[in-house]
Image (tube, rainbow, N blue to C red):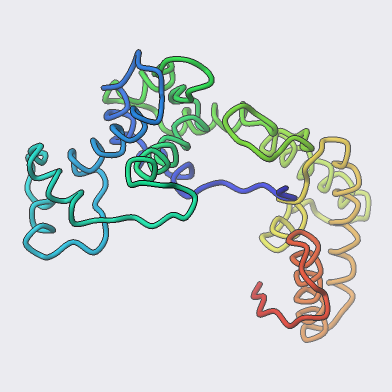
Length: 258
């Protein structure tokens, strides 16, 4: 079970999802079965929105041409590429798995609903706005951040969470500023180190107050030390957090960079 949250790089750049969303639109109204999942992944290749690794140069050059691949060219590529995954018995199941993976961020960002258990593939109003040709990505990303919560139907493994990461982060920053001002300092929000140490591991809204206090105590300690000792303290703090979050053996050696 995860003990922290994070944002996928494809979510941080919504424009990267548009080609996948256009291909998924072709399957709207279909139940997202394994067969459709595999077909979706193959269409990503055929439309040149996904290029398999390890292709010979004469095939790779075809991806530089504007036209999509013919059915024959697609079959040629599928014959050349064999994906390995011990969980599945054949290539079609692996294609389906890759189709589910490819559609994951579209579900997470609320652009589409494409899960077999939910029903037919649906492009949401947000997805329609993105496909309109003139989307306001700042507004789209803000709307996503405001709505994203854990747990949610699009992401598994977060059943013990109870958090809206974006809103919780804003609460923490505001409370840190309030406490820091009471200490007689100018409010400065939180820095990158404080964010990395305390924010992704904030998994329940009830822990906002505790997280705020931990940041203030951490900051005071860092400020009380000379530069070298502060660096050692921060490195050790990171190490302790990583060991706790990933349930590692504390007696082992780890190369953890801050």
